[in-house]
Image (cartoon, rainbow, N blue to C red):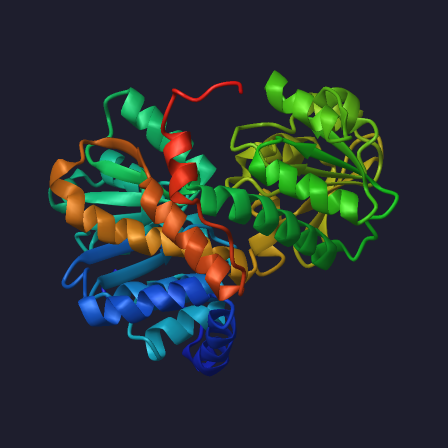
Length: 421
């Protein structure tokens, strides 16, 4: 791709800038990092290729990296998640090369990923590991210059750990997703709220009184279940992990196999990171009018090819709502082509939780530059001190104070001599 950007409409730049500034008001931790980065320039001259959801919150991360001196190219990590006004604003107002168009086809999507790789990155920044995967499989020419990368999502970390286990991963990756200040808040509260927001915006259906099936009870699934329950939904959990299933039961939800849940589901959301979670047996059991959606990154969680093959007719009944009529007359409704419903049909996670996630991204990039020579290829955690500092900064921004240990308490916790008295 020869142009230095590819966005839908540059005329959208001004409203995009206004929305970026609105999100920034709720991202005080990232703003404080940006102020320090402007002074210290820890990323001066470092080429960063970022493949992330192009949203207002991501724009503020890009501003922060640029303030630190980074030379950035940004592409979308999902064909339906781009906010076109934000993409235009990044190019026009912030001088960041951006390749992202909402609704882009698969060929354009990978052309945009290749444009990011053409930047010869020293640091990759992924949301789903598409840049890392493509560099290793299709673009090994880019490997030589990469010192490391970061990964934002559970799905991406699963892919990267599989690569590392196979001995295929050639450079170190910081798993931003595993930071407590990321997954405990972004995955749980962000995914929970934004997923319900996307479903409601797409369908305008009342959640109260509906049976809401959630496949996967990780942190994202916990969040979706909690918010669906809060809306008055009757929540059912489907799981393969016995500990998570037990936790769901103790949290007050019904737990059952997918085929049993399919028969009663009014709305079904997948958040597993796996393939064909809703497949032929589930479609066989579904009742007329069931709504299926995915909030687990890739649209492979729902066996869409099978659904299309079985349907005798398909039509769009609302924007991002497809009606599949089966041979027996039952209708199944698929939201957002099975892609992330919270970003495709809504605006993604609120800025307040992305503040911590993207603080992890910015500080992990700084850490990668500083420690690249000592990190071996593989998946590495966010250092605990970075995680704790972000939590402290977030609390301070909220006006919340906490206790500190006394010298006596610290000594007691670090000793073994004291016992029952």
